[in-house]
Amino acid sequence: MSELSGEDLTDLAFGAAVLGTGGGGDPYIGRLLAQQAVSEYGPVELVGLDQVGDDALVLPVAMMGAPTVMVEKIPGRDDLQTVVRMVEARLGRNATHLLPIEAGGINSMIPVAAAAQMRLPLVDADGMGRAFPELQMVLPTIGGVSATPMALADDKGNSAVLDTVDNVWTERLARNITIEMGCSSVLSNYPLDGKLARDYLVGGSLSLCREVGASVRAAREHHHDPVDAALRVVDGTRLFTGKVVDVSRRTTGGFARGSATLTGTGRYEGSTLELQFQNEHLVATVDGVARAVVPDLICLFESESATPVTTEGLRYGLRVIVGAAPCDPRWKSPAGLALVGPSAFGLDVEYRSIAVAENA
Image (cartoon, rainbow, N blue to C red; front, side, top):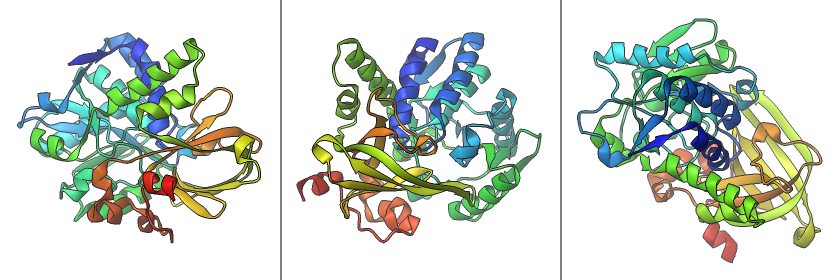
């Protein structure tokens, strides 16, 4: 057991931006919410999966919507409690722990704010080991865990509780409700007991985010390369260095979708990298060859500052370093690739792990 204090949140937000693979919402907005809550209510107790009893009720808290909208619509703190209380009312029991459903972006930070405000312990785990754009894209889905009952609320005071036949229907219905809510909502779903949490979550996610941020901070202090430091923690590799020369981005169906083109600089002079994204980066292709493919992680850093770049932050002229890191091994199974592999996003690309692509 450990605590998340205000000093930890900067490191945690940095690491969440790296594991967010360009999506998951802007973690720096979430950090401000978390810092305010921690300063007001005190540090958050962070517990490992092995400390969660079988009779626990673990509830994730998250935001849903397009990152391009979420940066402008910050949730109210009461909204975070509201959705948890709605699920509790449906289940007839109180939550014992809160959880980030994804280890990336704003959705790694919002549960910190909720846990501080509700004085509940936060589980050091998540449902993906990274960020994905759709609700059913979590490891508990592979285990047959239902996403419902699920509660949603918006900034206008509207709310809804869903009970669905499967997690794909949860995504379809919740996405349409979120679009009507202004492309941004707060939610709580995937109620888990301790055994399900241990079986189907990725343990240590928040600690990993914090370690990534701390390694980058230390690298800067000692004049080492901060991007290399971040990639070393996540067992990642550099793919490309270049300048953004084109970005095509649109908000459709409640997602931020698009592509970007980078021309190479330095040792990559003369090469071109193409990115495709749906909230998160999905494919990085160098000179026509796919070098990193979802579910592996594709991470962009500003060349000068090493600050992670979100998909909504991509702009013409930005100089970036592109890195990639391996996903949780369970995503490479047939069931995992069916749920979050390239075909799940309509992409005509074969998945190859970054280790294979590096040696191709």
